[in-house]
Image (cartoon, rainbow, N blue to C red; front, top):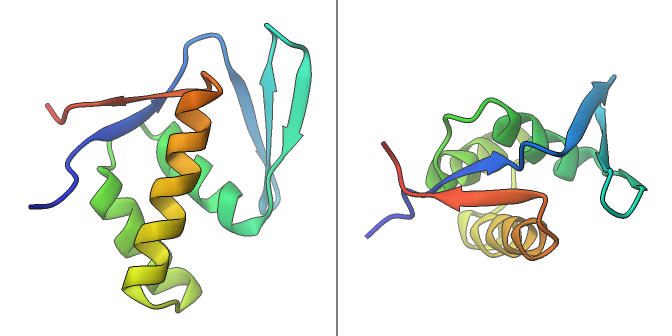
Length: 94
């Protein structure tokens, strides 16, 4: 069964895409995070608030030409880290 959760940014988080890089500011700890190209791509998907985890994985596979298993592991780990840091919430689709 697929991962149909939809990651969405926490309402307190400010994120901006500048070129191919995302800057993410958490005002709670005043830390500005600069994401790498892949992280920025994933953040852009998250910011749209409509893509499931599976859809993000598929987009990473297509865009970065990586193996599906590798993309799945890496995307899930990245999203879980963002969730643990309170930057996103993984919601059920719908």
